[in-house]
Image 1 (tube, helix red, strand yellow):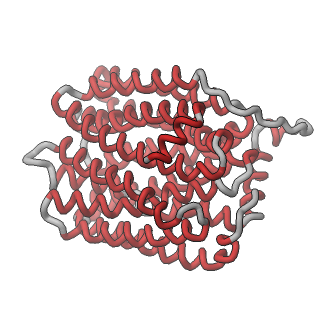
Image 2 (cartoon, one colour; image 1 turned 90 degrees about the horizontal axis):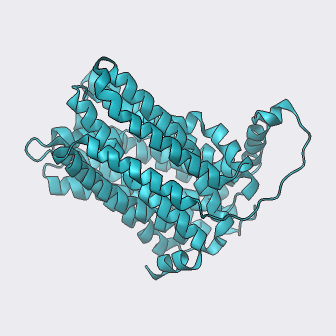
Image 3 (cartoon, helix red, strand yellow; image 1 turned 180 degrees about the horizontal axis):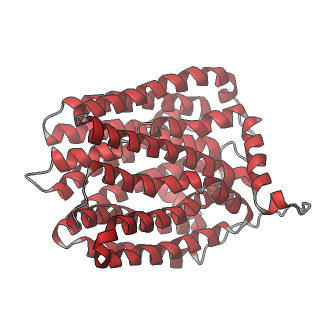
Length: 421
């Protein structure tokens, strides 16, 4: 823990980004549970609709990813984050109007959630690309591990609070708190100071103005560095089983619902996921340190950990066993998520960082959307049971792990070398 406090103390501008993100993350989880409560209140709680909500909250990261990456490499990353927060304030406030349009409630909820997600799609690549600007390379793993730990704590806190607030105070209170978190985040970022990035003098051309040339330039950069391309795909490999979010929601609503309290059941399993996410990178970092080869190995082991325990979820009967199984699965998932980002931050040039991280996030969220859509269709149309779905998703993670090891063996020598952008 001393290393985390040291990074926060020694780097005040990183501290601003950290606090801003932490507060807005709390709002994100309140928002998700509030929207589930809103849909349930209006009588729209079918698995396919819940899956659709997850998809529209994630898909823009893929669709807007190329544009978000180009913008993050061209425009002030600080102001990208601030504008994104203010857009989300306006969008979340509009959810209060949904009950007045009951006949079109589903369209309004999904449409507003889509706009909110587009704003988030611009925020996250800008934030991730900022870190190598304000932190030395030796602090990137610590900062990203702290980010994952905080994400997990806030996820657990947000899931627990969101479940309790939605259950006992209603979704409106949860959304009001969500609005306040985005406002606080925007205000806190105003004082952020980032190093000035050198401007490149280039001929004016329509492909440059529209960002098309920037996109192809980024693709060429990744293609010329196979290890970066491999690292970029690791997160997407885990996210091929992204339907686990729908799986946990339905397990919480239908199986582990504490005597008919679906909000509490969902919050319970989300909290287990968050707790696992908190400790995964901490444990993995003790094994890997700052060694690139060991970090890649930790990612490989993590795929097999996550896949095995999601398969085990199919057979558990007691809530405590379900909590433990989900917790252990996400020790692996969080390590894949955090270490893949750190590995890219250690290797990618700053001028390409926005595009690379937007591509990584976009590819990962595309996999989550496809997995969620397929999972919802399997349940709704083919009557696949939740235990069988858990086995299928766990098996997908295991297969992704096998592919990661197989492809990674090609780059073993390169993994052991100090990486230069």
